[in-house]
Length: 410
Image (cartoon, one colour):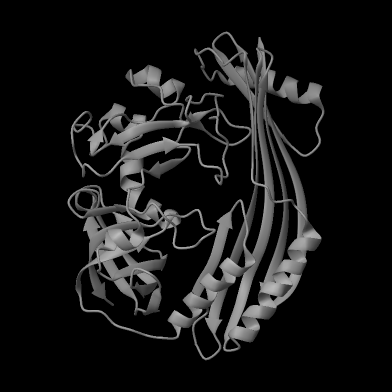
């Protein structure tokens, strides 16, 4: 019988904003513990929230073996690695003071705008240890500025969003970016229907990639349900498009190791390289079942049996800046988009609630609500322009992706 413990400790300070004023402050400390027992090629898992009795939790995991969940794979052993990212300190007093300063400056610069939502700082430490010498841990502290804004004269519930998520913080840079967006929002501009460069930052890149990510799963490839099933080892996209499974970035909220304690030496695995499909992603079970490469892609909750997911990913950046990628053309910078989808055949469309006309250096004006459309083979094929090597802000970790798309005014 082998024993393994997976723990997630989350500490946070969250400041709620309402009516451009601080409404409340909440501090939390949450400990989640999962205990795993491996015996006779089976796995039993039990979990506890907060303090727990070790003997009772272990017995619960042993009893869970009766569920008959098979796990005929070896567990990781004799590996020790720790990683700490982010130099921010979790300090509630400092965060409260900073939130007050930010709101005071925004109220002064934009008295015609009402702000709400929250400012938050969180520290997460994830550990995986077992009695076979495995000892892994990853600790990250991140800052999150999330301010919903509404023009005082607007009948809308909200008009836009300014925010930041990362492992460092620069007040002046945040205010500069926010002032540029808010000023541009007050300058309404229009564009003709047609093909335009569409720009999205890292967070919204997942909107474009969702079908590719789901269909690159080892389960989808292995069962033959993926639209990419016949394209493995072949060129399907632009030579400039490379997609990596990656846990190397310092700002990520998940650990460098997967749910089974596995990770690659350089913390990345190529899935698509220069347009060629290299590999689906898989955990131990999917790799074994479908005879696929094992890409260290196990995930799950603290108290669940490992299952296949894509833990983290990134598009390889180009050698060009955003301005160089645009090549003198202005672009549509998407700030809020929801309600879109990708069909089973790869056609993509989404309404865009908030977007700005971007001239290569700055936001010029706010566009009306739009519809953008394409398909995955065009978006990451002939219409793929690239991922910029720079961020639009000096402190942001988000690097913008540029794709030519059909754009229509709603």
